[in-house]
Length: 377
Ligand code: ADP
Ligand code: MG
Image (cartoon, rainbow, N blue to C red; front, top):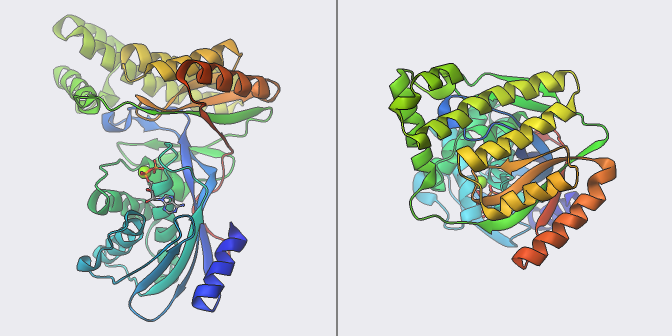
């Protein structure tokens, strides 16, 4: 990928630029916690977007996407927005930097990536973060704070791509650090690194390649349940709720709202437990909490689906240490922590059984926790 980008850049623009990269991400635990003021626990992975960039002094951006094999030019004013979706991510980053008083001038770029698209690993955040980091370095003497770079990516999704996302993906892509996961407090935006170096284990995603579109927005309904329970408790978000508090109002709320809140309160504690476990290198406890999260997402929060429960059951049968839905649910991937010696058997079994039942194989992505946004050279 690296040499392909360099060759393309040289051929198209007749010089060498500076190369930057930023990663996709996983979230080990902490699901549906962001809008409840809770914790998420992501890390950057060894799948990334790489771009070679050079200022061109022309006041226009000229960019070639290796993977899509498309070349686009655009200016830097609001009305210059390109129509190609992939280019809008880059245009949006330029505009969001400018809106914050930062500087962006014309540049040439060639980029490529190996983050699977739309698989829940946030290829879009990798793309935004790569360009946000690069343009900060090239035009702003790195004066824009890193957290602001993440917000620039998030605003790009909101304002130029029609995706109303939280901050986790861009945060993870920008701040990722090899051998570490990050516990992000979604209420205060404070975060802390925890060691993640599971010697003797692999982290692997099994992608069901299904996405169930549901009629009434289940995401909004989950949010409303959480808000109703918080209001009943007289608190802002479920971040401040305990199981005792929930029990004390059990007869005043619906069974459904009770179950939703029970999951969220439990999930907050599970993230904290996993952090403690990682500090002592206890990956067995990490795995147990992952299974508990899956169970909660499936039975109490009811955002699983048959395919994901099926993959989770296979993991259990194969003796996998930890397995759970990753992401909002209703399709997508499971994330699995599996001992090296069980890995081959698990993957073969998952492929075979899933294909026999659903008529297509799942996709398999090995991931290693790696550095986030950085300059290559
Ligand atoms: P994800 O969950 O992977 O972030 P999205 O739909 O949010 O899925 O983002 C995928 C979009 O990001 C693609 O449709 C494309 O516009 C852009 N993108 C991601 N990776 C690349 C790449 N390697 N080359 C060009 N565009 C990319
Ligand atoms: Mg995305």
